Image (cartoon, rainbow, N blue to C red; front, side, top):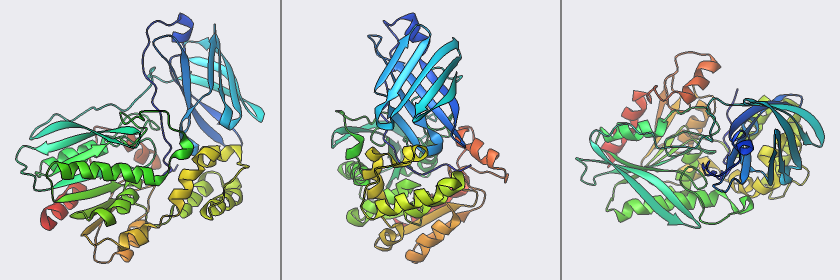
Length: 432
């Protein structure tokens, strides 16, 4: 099993359950099933309603890295349930058999059976701010307005900190919030929350935030998916960096996790931070990684997908997208993909003039040790730290079983591996 690295904007729906019919209430929640298209694709449907009882829904296809696809129409009549997604030319019609099962058909060109079952968490699951009890730092809410969105963040300020140093933590790809949790995965891991808490024990302040469209960082107005590029995400990170400067900090470090590493590199050359930290960051262009991941999951579509990616890399658009690849290549997300594919992390890191730390785990099933070594090769004055048994969400995994590795993605009781905290703290405290 692989978990792809792809950012798709998510528009969270409000949880308001007043003034609605009993029929509507029975469908509110999160439903999941498997669609057999030659291979099994997980489908997750989030059903919600506003205070007036108007029902709405959104669709996730985690195996295709597609999240938060808003439906154009959601209808409930008695036990009958229906939604349409115009941009996918898809429609689902089903009937509630009992409180936990919808028996229906998903039609996208051809009708396919799709049985949805209610998840145990029977309400829309949004990232929250479950926090570690503060010990020696203040927990401060931060809001920064930039380009039609108000970014929401959390600032940990050690009580003993005299504005000596601070680190901006940039989350990874997909609908990942400030704490390192994703609505695409069950449960929480709280990896970035735990990292920030651990750094505070060394007197290191930190700021982490929800990316636009994730958690509390919601657009002020409706923004089309077609308008989003990776440069927007980089601009947001720069705005948060500038907020730290406005607070009087001079020794500001940037730490990017996964795709956050690439975002951090994009802004670091301009901002000239005190140091840059890549945590599980890709060392190859996105096209190589996407092709590798799709080949592993959908080998029958390898040639078609490779050709599509090659076209996007040349700046062309792909009009005829295979339905099985719609989550990654649908027309509305192609502007973002194009902006992402052009970036070369090796070239970006080679241009940085600040101290650089590159950290990678040996149990990472998303980013390889080769990626870290590629970054190090491009920036040989950097420091490379390979951490034994650390997985992609920064937890210790002693087993070689993929299932055990994946389980760590949803285990908030498992702390971030201490060697990571030590490596980052030592880097910051010795270069400030």
